[in-house]
Image (tube, rainbow, N blue to C red; front, side, top):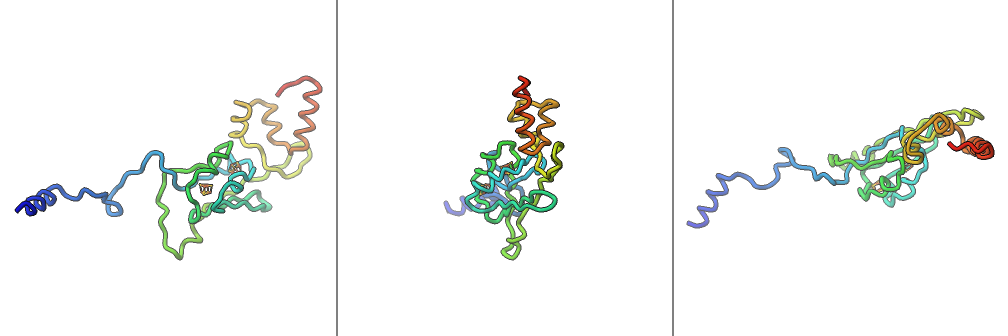
Length: 170
Ligand code: SF4
Ligand code: SF4
């Protein structure tokens, strides 16, 4: 009799479990999930690739620029890449919709290319310093910072030395 009462109560109450995948579910605010890469913020330092123990990140030099590939299938969501990325070009989102069929595992990638520009001084192909990095490094920007950002390291050093001799600060 007691059992019947419990059954009836449960029938009236409906399911207490999460309805997913047949209905909506919740996403914790601090969940670490799918990586998002911003190629306009990346400065090609490759630190994220270096710290990724899962080998989920790969950079390749191409004629157009530095090609970034994240293989979601092997990402462990540790967050180290985001932690070490100064301009925050790589971030973990709360998007956990990453389930896939076994045969699709090699297609679980996102790709981006950090475009090359020509050094405004010597015309050599370079990866420019991103505005996001300048914002962190200089807490803002000005004409000289913008100019230095479009120079190769050698030309940047040369100009910085000249400015230093003249007593001009950036
Ligand atoms: S995503 Fe960040 S850490 Fe990775 S190469 Fe770009 S700037 Fe460096
Ligand atoms: S979250 Fe961790 S495992 Fe995933 S790409 Fe970043 S460093 Fe690699």
